[in-house]
Length: 627
Ligand SMILES: *Cc1c(COP(=O)(O)O)cnc(C)c1O
Image 1 (tube, rainbow, N blue to C red):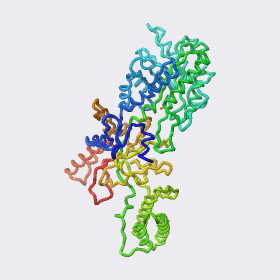
Image 2: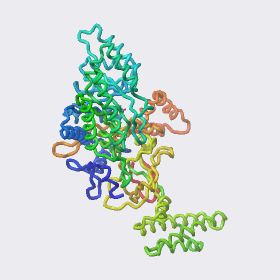
Image 3: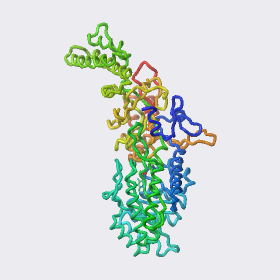
């Protein structure tokens, strides 16, 4: 994996400059510099950095690519897009999103009442709002209120019961109104075709959403009977997220396009838009030959425009306006999670740890000789000898012939020999060597929670690109697995022979080492769990001024301990009083000590739950604050 697969996943957003990974924009600062900058202000633990210029890039690319496709095919319908709030509702993200998209009349999609309130507040009047998902009478009423405010809102019918409620609410809101105002109406269709991959369930006949053709005909009649047919203007579908291949989309487009044309011919004159949902994939892979997407955005846009045009022409109806609700594509690249490495868990396997005696068991002497004299020429032979000796020595230990120090020396020497022979033989990528890497992998303990910050890794085995912030001029040599700080064995990104990650050999007691997790901007934040009560990390927005200088803005620190408990509905007053009382009532400490303990306690309570300092186990070194 060259340069951590930057040329595969980074889309020119990041570049390696000397030995650091830098933002490929404006003054091109390194992520390390920004990280240090924020840490110097006193914020420790994991950091989530947001880059509005990357949101802008995705939005303008989406609009420009569709514009190009429209021109190429001389397409007469217009192109619109909304951002599906479920992908990221965090205010620092949404505020940036609305700021950078003002030139595009970009809107929001809501799937719940709370999301609808965000959409009603954050969408500029006139920009589209689409409302999907299951709705009750209150949610439908909120849609009518939004329209009365002047919003351009489309409510998607997901089922016939919902349509009945819409008809009822329409009566309540408009019978006595001076100017009757009704939201635009869309229908979600249940497609025969479905997506592929781990998110494929949103399409197809067994999908949770959408009307079958029989229901569609019935909806048509109901709308007509209630004088609402003039509001039916959008056909909607969504075939699932992270669509790796283009073929299922094409099938869905043909199906949806024909439904559009059929309804129009039947008399749905106001029908004028097709909403293709989301599903545009993001390339998360950092390994050649393991890519997740087989099409470009231009191919995607061309297919949509071409197929809609072809169907409209052959059925003799107008070319529909095209709406997309791509979320992952817009949001994923905008944020980077940066977390400090706290500790490496195989440092006992270094030469310093050896406790060789004046006379050692002969096999250990031999291991020592092998280690000292191993060379390229004999590497494989020596390696096999070492593995063989280890088996014998472990048996000798079980039988009581060698002691614990001998056993420790065996483990260290064999590990050192494996490491050395892998380095010597690295041009030969044999299976045996790959298997041995599993054995010598280093565990990097990293100050973050995978449950909080990469929930799709935990739940769906989704990979995210990972790389260190610096030392990029040195080839990393340690096969690495990553441990988060939760007490849960699922919080591990294990070393994977198929998707290997190598990191640098570092001494955390002397030097800092940060890992960056990329493409975390879609879905990860709100899906993140407070497992072990680790909360959303400290976040910041990175802006650039016209001279290219960067600014750290809107810093929000991770919640402190009391706020975390308050969120769980603990009475923090009682917690506070109890802690205080227990110190004051303690009989074995002096008044002086009590004051000191209370001071410390309150300091800790005001901090977040990520680790502050950790005792590096290399005790002869002064401890550097690596959190
Ligand atoms: C989730 C969802 C989207 C967004 O999908 P992405 O794959 O993130 O682009 C769009 N529309 C609907 C209806 C959705 O449910």
